[in-house]
Amino acid sequence: MIHREHQGDIQIDHVHNAALRGEISERLGIDLGKKPIGMPLNLMLLMSQLRDEPSKPVN
Image (cartoon, rainbow, N blue to C red; front, side, top):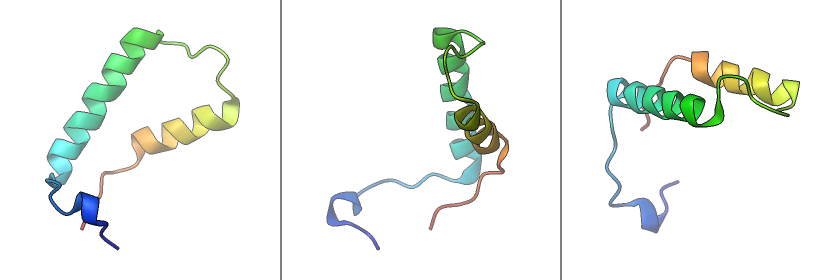
């Protein structure tokens, strides 16, 4: 379902999506340090899965 507030949104391809995710994760890694402090193990596992999951085009 497309919400009215999202009708004018620009969609990007999987290559640009992956590049943006990589840049965001790199900057977060720098800002937060390489070792997360106090992050629960289950959240760390979910974040690893998200990072390693191949990007899929959004329809």
